[in-house]
Length: 257
Ligand code: DGL
Image (cartoon, rainbow, N blue to C red):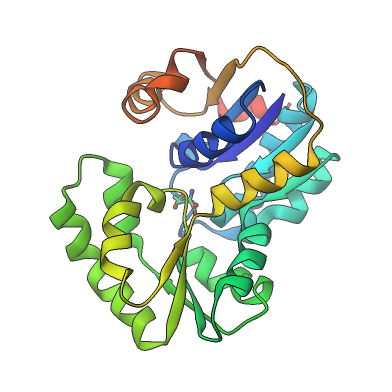
């Protein structure tokens, strides 16, 4: 069983990548909806809650832990590694190495939360010049769901203009929610940059590193938020996964057992 952690439902984009690449696996999706968003949360709170989820994943018998959340990967990867004490992956490292090889001598652009940009985790991980631009409004649009292409284009305009201005020829979608807007963002960046989805890069790595196993393809979702809201979004976004899923609520305090 592979455990995935996200601050909310955005990590479903990463689950989707893993589900396609490692199809015969069981998954434990951990969602801290009660404390969403992580994008501008104090770092010590993020570390405390990520540690609790990582320890929970260990108690539940997960063989590997994936921090699907870019913000948690930027702030709390080491904390998660210690609490899980097993193979622990953040979404940033893998896509960073792909980005450096994809850029034709230009700048690697990153769209991410305020917290991810503040830590400069992408700048430290990518061996090339990097421009990080926070786009909280665009991320909020994805979280709310139901945005039109026009809404996306309007909110993406300023952050993309900043990346283009900086000379970006590759743009990393450095937030779990942004792959939802990939089609529109690809249209807008086509003349000057290619897009990279961290979930896809990570799924490639896990497919290489984790042993092949035939499991049940079950998906157990554990959320600190409202399980019905979670179930609705799962059904909207990943109907093919929803039919394998069981959703449970957990009190944040219960995780700290
Ligand atoms: N999951 C977060 C990330 O990838 C985005 C949402 C949030 O702010 O918590 O950075």
